[in-house]
Length: 98
Image 1 (cartoon, rainbow, N blue to C red):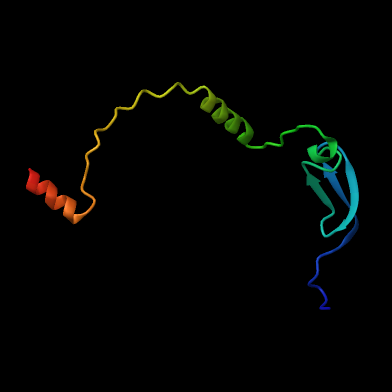
Image 2 (cartoon, rainbow, N blue to C red; image 1 turned 90 degrees about the horizontal axis):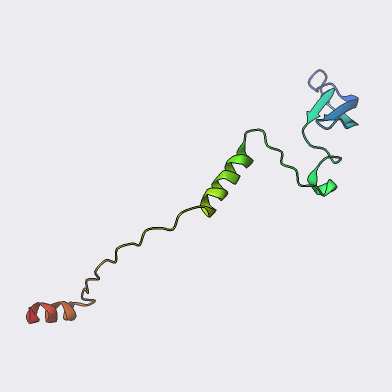
């Protein structure tokens, strides 16, 4: 291995969660901060918890609520169907009959 190119390795690096849980691991950083860990993650706890930093969940819920509350659409006008010939033979027959 080449000397002086590898980062410093911390044997007792700490991972600190937003819930307060602390875990010791080996890492190239002395301290790592995370938002969710195994003590507070919904998969492990069985609780429904939203981790939202930019308001995405609220925006999604507003859109879903708006879809449910949409007023019924106005009746669309029925367009008259113009029967067009499907083949050259039908087109020639239509011209002759006109």
